Length: 88
Image (tube, rainbow, N blue to C red; front, side, top):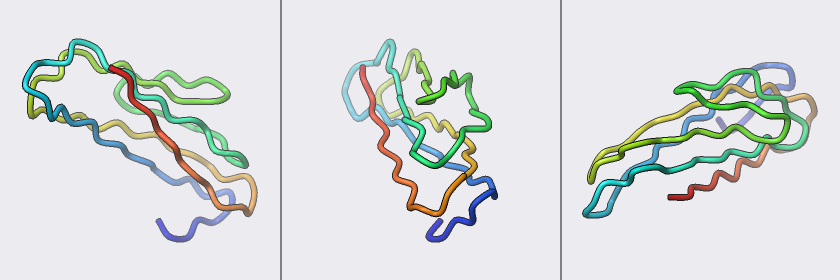
């Protein structure tokens, strides 16, 4: 969303897509928790730590995609910046 109100949860969703020609046996998505926010929950088996949410995505066939989501609660008034990364 363009504007977020402190204390109100926001849902952040990421889509991982295999654009290659072979299956990806194991990919890891990491979404660091932005400053001035707390993570409340994660879908698809996401593991929550104090600093990040991590998902392990197994067996992603060519052309397949997976969506994962996390809910964050802003605790301040600064802009939240999300910087996900993927390995695999």
